[in-house]
Image (cartoon, rainbow, N blue to C red; front, side, top):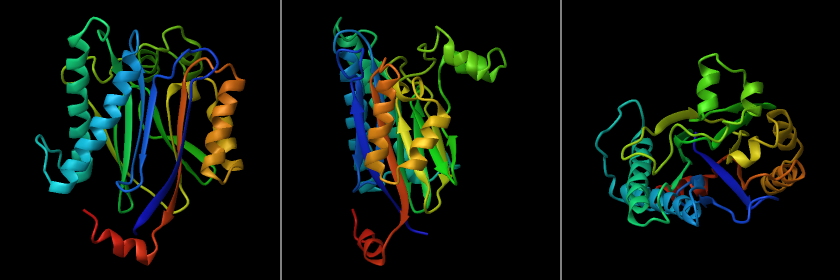
Length: 266
């Protein structure tokens, strides 16, 4: 089945931070969406997240146009998933080198969660603790895995999720772009269904809005734009302690005209 995703996106500084170090992109032509949450002193967090978004988008588009097969190549995944993962690794290299270039950029880094549609399959590349959820039949399911110290403790049974949510170590990441020369980037693929809703977000959302409340907001707002606005508003009502960025998308079926147009897309 040829599916499409109509996206809406909203980013807000929040009520506490002076600047917004999150970045986001929705490229409908590429059927690609990305969120990134930057970190570092001065303006380097904002710089890192914007580099991650731009390099990932541009490199993936270049590889898509030339049908380039990256190396290494993981046969478990589609070409597009491998291309997306390679593009994220290139973004890491650019950020890593930029972090060594000046004192102001030292320690710069960013999370990144990217998703693109290929047929009925969602191709995902992920590093850090931004998240991608699927909302299906009233249930919200987290697809990505947080690369954070507290979630490592949860996976090892040392903390419950409730304890992790209150931990002072919540912001310690175990993986991020720019922090290592060649970090592991998680790749996923999942089959979508017509009517699915996607939610991509930075930690400014899920650290202030519970998953049941998030599901309630998605259920109550058929409009993706209104869902984004309600999620950000709720995060700010609950303290707005961090930048918050959300992308919400609804999966639909392509028309015959749209499917025909895809045949000539380059």
